[in-house]
Image (cartoon, rainbow, N blue to C red; front, side):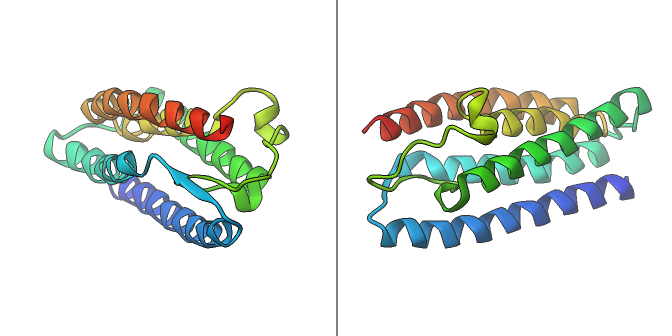
Amino acid sequence: MIAYLVLIGLVVLERLAELVVAKRNLAWARAKGGVEYGRGHYPFIVLLHVALLAAAPAEVWLAHRPFVPALGWPMLAVVVLAQGLRWWCIRTLGRQWNTRVVVVPGLPLVDRGPYRFFPHPNYVAVVAEGIALPLVHSAWVTALAFTAVNALLLAVRVRVENRALAS
């Protein structure tokens, strides 16, 4: 359980680093005339991600979920790969990356890095992590609940983002 709490703590630190980058990029985008879209759903995304980071260890502790090596180690690998994909997206987008949907007029769509292969690769990382992080320590209820709610929110988010990028 302690090792799992350390993992959750590392993910929390990673999220905080993301927020620092996002805040800096948001200020840059606004200074360049950036327009934010879909502001209404953003608090729900934040709440869902905070809930994931709280619910997974709570489920492990309260429901006495075991660490099952045959499940836990592969899921840990998925978590690590998801972080790598996420930071590849952040690095590729540079100042255009944000946790919000912000479009700076006149900037071209990014078509390099992971964006060469498919649209919205950061959301692939979010989905993978949302399933894998709880399952590292068998928190299957959290994995299912996060995945269900995340699917609804991502459906909204992707529509908003696609409309924003098309404008």
